[in-house]
Image (cartoon, each protein chain N blue to C red):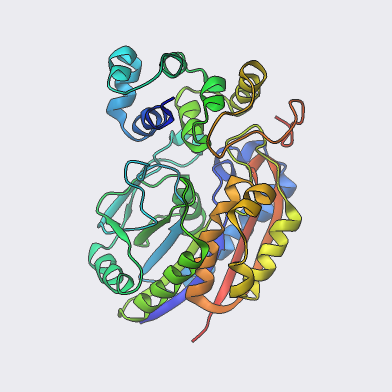
Amino acid sequence: MSLVFAGICSHAPGITGRANLAEARLRDPFHAAYHRMGEQLLQARPDALVVVAAEHFANFFMTNMPSFAVGMADSYSGPIEDPGWLGIARTSIPGNAALSRQLIQEVMQTVDVSYAEEWKFDHGIMVPLHFLTPRFDVPVIPVNINCQGPPLTPLHRAWAFGEALRRAADSVPQRIALVGTGGISHWPATPDSGKINEAWDRELLDRWQRNDKAALLSYSDRETYREAGQGGFEIRTFISVAAAARGLGSVQHYAPIPIFAVGCTVAVMDVAA
Amino acid sequence: MSLFALQKVLYDLNRDPRVQQQFRSDVKGLLDGYDLSAEERSALASGDIGLIYVLGANGQLLMHFAAFLGLPWADYIQAMRDGVAKHGPVRDGIYAMTTQMDEKVAGV
């Protein structure tokens, strides 16, 4: 069929794990917007949900770090973290190995990807699923872009990957939803946790909403690290979604919530021809 | 320095319940399997979050280790600050501290 939904969202573990430490006036509108995005996603009646994530060494490590990896299993498990710490119970999540295989074969025509028949989800995928498909009943195809272990995947390759993913989604009979998750600026897992560069975030979101390829690809890692922290490297996931969807984006929620460590973001993008 | 090995311990520990079990029952035997400096070995065995942070371990690996050790969020953040105060700036990696020692941006 084709790509039937595209969006981006935050995934910081504090969103669920430290929900009780956040002010309700900040937390509740964000959680509500996140749930609404899930309703929109389900209204698109997807047969599978591709989650382009920036995982944090749950599966991939510097022994053998792929630029891109795609899951190819009939089921996954998560969260890898202590469930009490993350605030999400451990569960199994359905996949679709045959569909993964079809998508991977098509993506590989232009972008080299690794595949993985085992994949343990960390907060980077579990937090989005907790809000978007809370019954964990939509088959998920996990994707990882290396945003953690330098040398990182170049931004223009994240774009090329998004284009390949779109071509692959259009080549299968199933209805595919796509969600990219990461960033935006943040300094997670450091004493700086909670520092957020709102101006930088809003500029990035503006470029993303306009689907301005040149502007999205113009960031250097040096600049991103300085202005947006190591968490800013996760913009690769947003870039791949823009490349796949080809449309204009709409930010449905953005608000810095320091105890969650990020500018909490929910946005969707029209899928253009 | 063997930051790769230090991080590999954390990677294995974070994702494998059997490694977690051995960490609790036989940490010496577990760490014998990795090419670690004495400083790294001691930091891991004692759960010294501050020193592991300063040695340059990726923050995501370290955050999960802190959760495994049961550290409350505020204590984990403070342990990294204490590590920098005691041992100096982060020596490697991409998780350097950029805020001031008393600058609690998220209130913790």
